[in-house]
Image 1 (cartoon, helix red, strand yellow):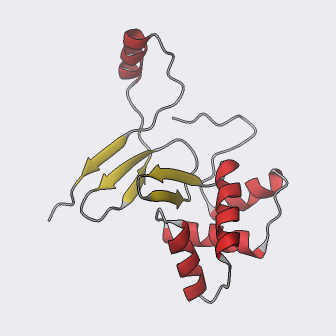
Image 2: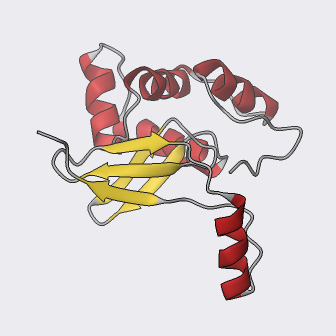
Length: 145
């Protein structure tokens, strides 16, 4: 369910993410570009430590502090996603409203855009008295082996 304002289109590509940074007046530092490129390239939800390790393995030297500060700034501005887990935060490239499929075997989190039927949303509103403007669904399951 899209709740973006008319002047801010959803971020669906690396180019969209870089454009949003510029539109918000955020400096596009080398480190910030490295992080965004990695998240769009790998299409995974990663911890700050995993991002740090992968970038340094690629020869893109970046410090721990720089990774944390940039992830915080990007997620605060809604350019990337931050998921709070019991074992820490994970960051992903999709920032617009979406749901997740959590694989219990691999601990992977997969992004999925899903639209619930209007009738179901009206039913939830009738039962709760709350007007639904956005929703996120978390599915949990195991890979078929």
